[in-house]
Amino acid sequence: MTLDDAVAAVGDGATVALGGVRLHRRPLALTRALAEAGRRDLRVIAFLGSLDVEILLAAGCIAELHSPGVSLDAAGLAPRYRAARQAGEPRFVEWSEGLMLTAIEAATRGVPSVPAWMGLGTDLPRLNPWLREGTDPFEGTPVMHVRALDIDVALLHVPAADQHGNVYVDGDLGADGLLARAARRTFASYEELRPADPLRAAISRLWIEGTIEAPRGAWPCGCHPHYAPDLDAVREAAAV
Image 1 (cartoon, rainbow, N blue to C red):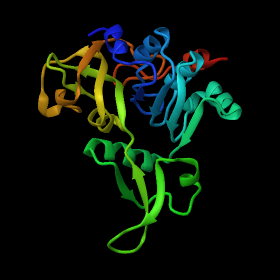
Image 2 (image 1 turned 30 degrees about the vertical axis):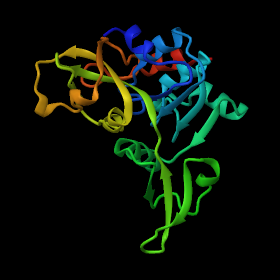
Image 3 (image 1 turned 180 degrees about the vertical axis):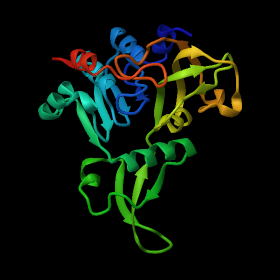
Image 4 (image 1 turned 180 degrees about the horizontal axis):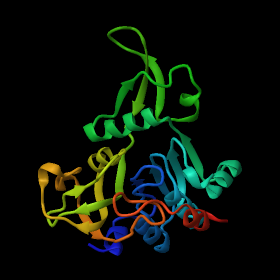
């Protein structure tokens, strides 16, 4: 596929999940293409978001952002995210890392909600309508009911893919495996084509609708083992 093919699958108002972890494997080529296409009113899910969220905020694409946090890691604070939080726009939904993973996992199972034991006694249920404290019907103990976080499209960037659509990740997969299974459609850009070795694939082609060749598609964030984050370029790209 091409970047434009993938972006065409994302309509205004869609729920879009962004893969990667902090400054690694952010789907920046896909994110830039989404911003350039002028998409609006997106609900964006970013597990530890970074420069990808900054790009979409700058382009006015986001109506609602779900994340445990957004930063530029060693490159400093995320200025557009900080300004958005201070202004109260777009809407931000607060998550802990564990509870967001639980909500995505509920979506992979096709169930409306699952119980968890994180976040009890905190303000999170007041801030996040996907969370509700309750009681376990068997033990009578407090539980956090976590509503499934449904995803229309997941956008990932990976070091390699093969001709069948299996994708390969060297290092921390983060939430990408869950995102691929939870989303109705998943697209992955990749650095290089690799000979097929399905038993070593990080995510099976069963969960990937299309792959896009995009060398340096995460730059200036990193994509191990091809390149490390360029902190100066990250700061420059995020400068307001």
